[in-house]
Amino acid sequence: MSGEEVAPESRGVSVQDLTTVDLGPELPGMEGRRLRMRMVTIAPGGVFGPVHDHVGRPGTVYVLEGTITDHRDGVSTDYGPGVGWPEDRKTLHWLENRGTVPAVEISVDIVGE
Image (cartoon, rainbow, N blue to C red; front, side, top):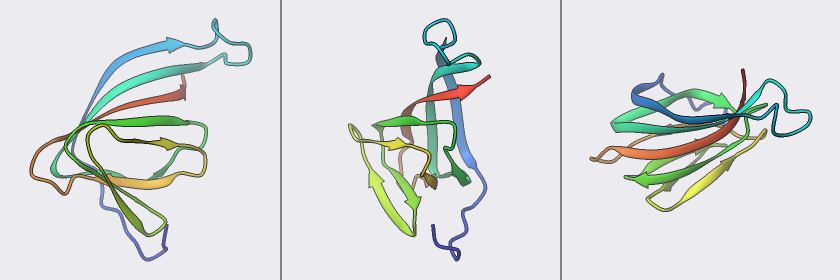
């Protein structure tokens, strides 16, 4: 991400926890980690910020409705319904909804407790 780009603080974002799985009993070495699925809705003009990383919290995102603009490394990429992206340890980004309808994504990641 360019040092000149400044991401606004979050606004117009709602997050609904859908489910989690305790990974400790499922996989050796995963004690204290959970697989989490959330639905994130970003209102028109909304921002999921500020700039954040995914170190220790890898995941994937799938867009259900609307368009989400992902800002990383000075590049803005639009993702519409049926498209998604990975979020790995190298991800440093922020998101926004530049559209006129709510953007809805399903986010699945591994988190610590």
